[in-house]
Length: 365
Image (cartoon, rainbow, N blue to C red; front, side, top):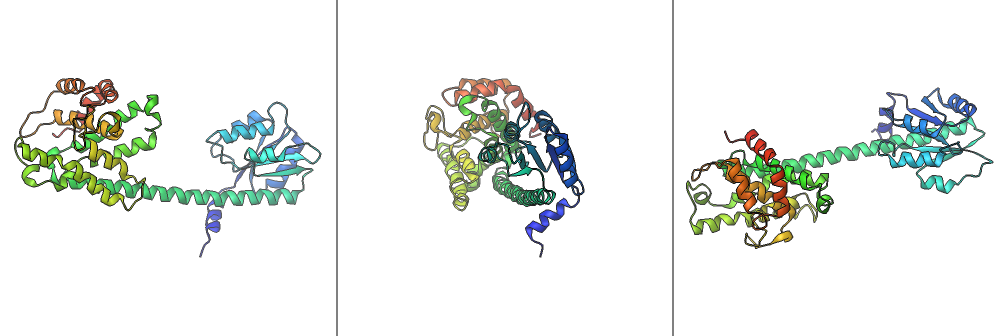
């Protein structure tokens, strides 16, 4: 059976690992190169700026041997800058220092250096320490690859779960046609726009926007529990039927909660549950099912509310014709601060041509 460490090492046998040597003394570069060049590809830099430039080359060096005492930019500063850059922060660094130099080993380690080697160099010691650092890097990279693959598989599972649940609602309510695809793209457009506002920037990071996009198709999943006589009625609903239809919000929450309880408090279905339950709430508190008002309504549901109503206005039904884009925009604007979050309406107005394009791209026809 191949150990994880062996598997990690075998992948790197296909290429020579690259080492960047950084020292202002040519003699030191020569000695280190002679120690290492039989097994590794060697790069040279005589100062800090050159080291930073070479570290950004693709593929990046697998290890950097960095002199501490250099004119201009010293090794500590080079190390700090390498660690501050997302492209170079994971490259292991070994500091080079003379035995008689006053260096702050604790400072170097706190900046992220992995080890020190001292001058005058002992070839066997240099080779062994370099080999140990590269062995550790291979093992660490292998673990990171495993984590990334598991994360990718988990994301695919989550997307498949959402897609399957959304399909249930779509099969029951076939009249909506491309409604799910349109509203999904409307919600994403709104979220990306208002994420630029400081008050929403933290709440709407890239991950949150991604989950909003994936969760939006579940906004009507509760319709799986609505009777066919109501869901497929070819005309306006009676008051009693409308009350029954309104129950799709609580049914949707129940459907998602039954899955959510197995996944923990912060599962990916939490956003979907908020959308399904609250997308018919109103900014003025006159919506359903709870009569929430203002920012008590989850942001995800406030975004979906505008997307859902715009699409309903633009879509043809057996009991009504499709409205022109301009009419739908006017109705949404008229609902600012009553039915809809004013910030979301302002974003909608700015994006109205994008909404028109999405409606045309995913039209029922």
